[in-house]
Length: 267
Figure 1 (cartoon, rainbow, N blue to C red):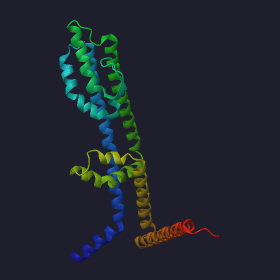
Figure 2 (spheres, rainbow, N blue to C red; figure 1 turned 135 degrees about the vertical axis):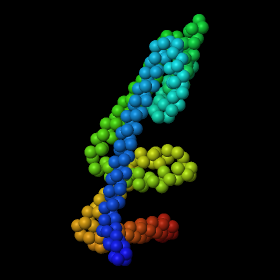
Figure 3 (spheres, one colour; figure 1 turned 30 degrees about the vertical axis):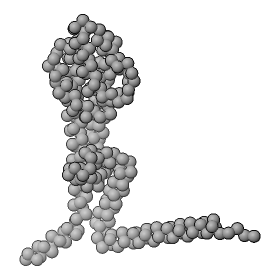
Figure 4 (cartoon, helix red, strand yellow; figure 1 turned 45 degrees about the horizontal axis):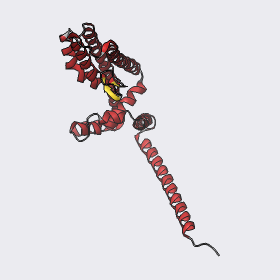
């Protein structure tokens, strides 16, 4: 009886194994899209709260120390979340020289605080124009980031009703899984897997793998596992022969060219 049950389970796995893999990949894809959507909305709430505190601090002319302390506490976290949206190439009024890649929320908010403190002490600070420049530069960066988060949320919401997107997202994560595991053990840099997933070549490979999986599952259900395996063996053999023929022809051509170059001139 146990042997019969084992045989039945084995038969089911052979018949529906590819389908189970496809369903798992689709589930992973849906999970990624949902996580991205939730993450974008949560980050948007945090960013709006950060911006409100920044406005409260600026409008108080630096008197709202509680708002500033919260801004300083969250500045590095916000800068990491904003990424390139936090960067600006500029000539700040408090340095007088141009520089690239200022991190607005990290570097400019303390300068605004010092400006207000200097004004209260009877100084000039960076001047009204300088303070306005700092304020609008920071605010513009936060607005750009909110716009990017809104685009991400809308794109993710559309993907939630697109099965092709589920498959593509799931396959990308499956292929990148080894890199994520290496990152978890400190063998590669943190964030390296996410960077790889954004590359066009990687997405093309993931899309091709997803297409092959769908064709395989459909073929198994239409013509059977054995005929599907035979078809793939035939394709692999044909491709191998074509590559072998191409390499042979290439070597022959290179050899002929080399002989022609090294042959002594005819008299």
